[in-house]
Image (tube, rainbow, N blue to C red; front, top):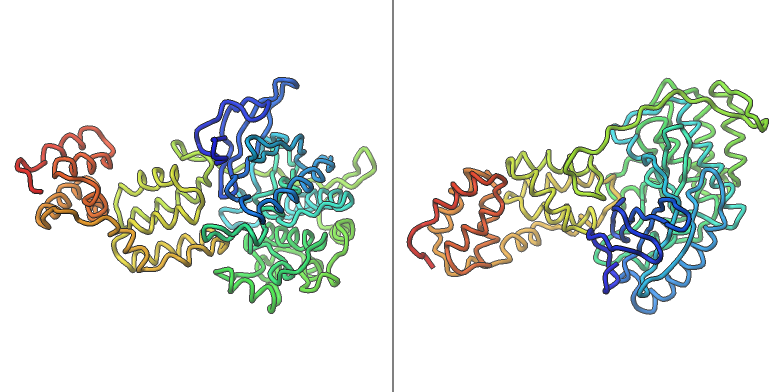
Length: 467
């Protein structure tokens, strides 16, 4: 953790008494590190929070609430909950030490928008509901149940993470830097209305996840947060059996109740939701050693590992999609550009904003933005702030300096041989930052991926000084 309280991709040697050994992920809230607890000889996950998110009077209040809720979450000891071991602060920047779980997030299984086998979907949601039931009995409400907070282990066991942490992440006061923090795709009507939330909000979110597991899509198909909010507040959810005709019709009634607009019309406790599912006798069962019902899922194939050379902490599927769509307008350089930008951006919104700024044509730029919004599931409405004017301003932020237009056009043509259409943007961005044509070519050469091509490009530097 840096002196400023910010987290970065540079690994700190230690956080508290834990030795940092790797990077597990990062996002707008902070960074998650892999750590080692020498006292007990075990790996741990260490979730850090950016100090800048907790500044000012409001930040002090949130930090106090955060401490209370994380300590409450520490009381939730259950096989389906990622255990919180410790809360600490280093240089006034908070961190949470948690059980390190080797599994894949449920969202990885939903990337292809294909339904899970019925037995698997039921097995997953019942384990999630058991975790919620235990937490609710301990007075802890999650408030942000979603596929990214549900981890599926190789043996089929489910672990729910971020209990007690989600309230900080979904707080209205933490929408700084134009980012919408939270997950609208899984929010209940009362969350959109800004009302108090309780255990029935968690059960609604679990039903949303269950619906997606059964059908491959969500109950509401709004493309942005505003459209989604209108649907959640005013329209009935789509019927699961209409989207997946192989499902038994009895499921529709269970989902209709679980996704009711009014909290009092839903299942009031997790055990009632579980009982409704088990009462349908959807799949074969065996009696467990403790006389409980055990649902036997079929083997679920794990998703493919992330492609090599992907920046750590990012969703590899998201970056691959960005590369694919950017290559259409910028050429092969797009792959390097996406990965380089991912190392600098602090959130998906910031990543997309920076990538949009490299696209010269307005129609191509807007198409890329729409595609990325869809890939993000409508959760990142901060992309709406990327207007045509703001992007063009970003492209032309550096003046063309004292270079003649003919010199810049020559540089563009020379660079386009290796990078394609993006050469025009790079020349404009670089021209205002250098003083000589030789320096311009040197800076542009840094964007060329291979050494032989860089050397060939630099041989084309004009002999005379054109400044």
